[in-house]
Image 1: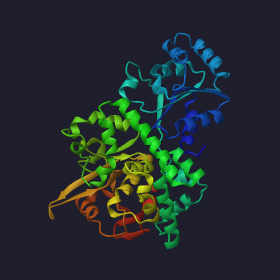
Image 2: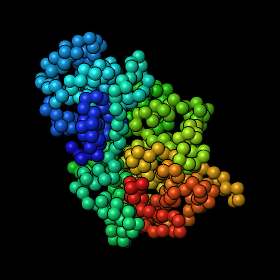
Image 3: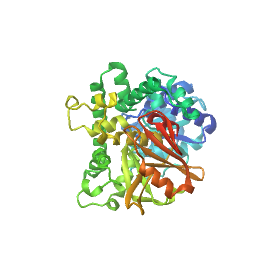
Image 4: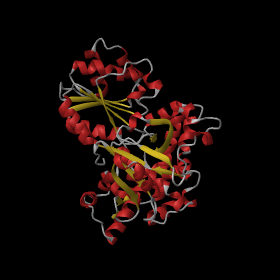
Length: 442
């Protein structure tokens, strides 16, 4: 099992909750939820039962239809799974709980009973058909699990040093130096290629073959497509997901729904966007109409951009219509010779990093009255009572008119101006030009 940061969050929940809440870990398929929860239950409890509702028998699922006799339920679970439970020292895991909504509803009674701890895992957990006709328990504490971040990726490769060194340089605002920067940039580009899905990372470590890594990612994308068809047989969700790379490459100020679904506008597919977001497979950046610390109150739901939740899947999605050997995107990206029109890949990885760090994603476009030119700031972060403006560039240091114009217009609201790019750290007046891998510290 790979070392995952969410393990510490599980431990904190166990130590502070003391059985008063259940823990629900939600996130996209194949992100590692089941693995980390099983490892946690094995390490932190005297015994545990893992009920995988994907393989559980109809009789096991039916146990949660009637909660009048909890003793009977616990007895049947212990007999079925051949595990003895000890009061306040054992845990019951409901894996893929969305497949048995009555078990999720039962959490209220089970937590109230207080004998054991409960952890649930689920994908597509909020999709309507998975919560229809059940009472969502208020006793649930939710944690969202993302793909492996860059530090977790380096841990998996046996590197426990690089990230802490990078953080020291970030905090002291010092450049890495030519040799160190070149190596760190290549390491980060490797992360972008492989991504953070544990199966892809494992494939890279065991084979050192990017073609086999690509095959793993294609299998995951096919799994997602199957899920989308179950959620929405019309195919709208699948079409919206598949078009994410093309939409970002188009460099438009928003996701152009009409170019993907003929005759549809953004306001027509808000439900599909919500379901895509709930699936955990995408990240949504909303337009902030009035940039400031209260952006959640003035975001425009019909003006948004979509990113994939994993950068490795994004790259494979962008080229999934070609065989691996027919394109050289991996070698170009790894060597730093990526074409300028593929710079949207860097925008997606920054979106993933910011979301994993707990930031809501917002951007802003505006017309400069002096130049009559349209500008866009890629990401806005609320910090205290101000905001930080972020522009992402895939190439080296050139001009940055968008963030300059934004800073002039909203100067009183800005805490930091940040350019994330593929060169070493430097300061340009009030603008901080940071290596792209420093995004993890924002």
